[in-house]
Image 1 (spheres, rainbow, N blue to C red):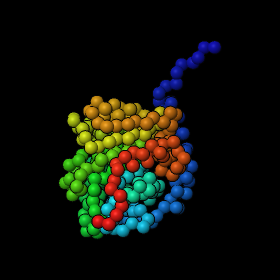
Image 2: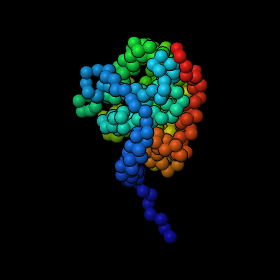
Image 3: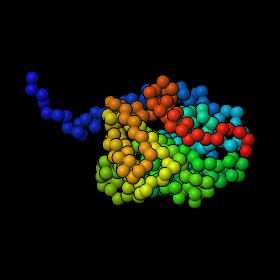
Image 4: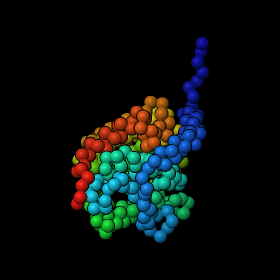
Length: 289
């Protein structure tokens, strides 16, 4: 039997994107169940706008003066939607290993553009360092992560170590976890919107030689209809060519949401991968300062 012509790329992408969108209600139901069992959080403003705040989650039973490692996780939502509150389950693997976890928010389009969003993230990093010092919470080199648009922002923050030292951190991030993130703006459409955003394009910010202390873990599904799998594929290839320590875990047939199921489902195959990556930092055990 003669086969028909191959499905055009745009049709396949549309199909995958529709599947990802229709899967959101179930994703949020599972996430909401995970949120109900999480420890309380503190909401801390870092600017005058209602969106300029971050959430601080600390391991149950810990004291402010305890020497604990730090992690920052940036939420997804196409730079326009989503809240740190909705993505709190992503903090679970870090909390289990004794981290303080921070989830920043930021202003949204159309009132601000991508450079202002990045600037908000930098302001949050600076405010957090000052908050830690004024509340006697010892600082250390953090880990950073994010999903979708949050993965893009996490990549940019990880690729600029000078932003962290200028903000008062003792060292820049040591680990970067990027889940289904847009990391190569040449793949984004419409291209005219992103073509002039070179300073916000992670793949163009890679340093040569790379930061030797920075390790990367990328998770991405091959049928992602919202952020093409090639984003992680291209970025991982560029990381390896630069000499960086990087792993790409491909999720065969996975859509956009597949790289985030570890946040609420401990049985997800990649939950252990993420936990091992976090654990590899070998932080100092919790204890008094």
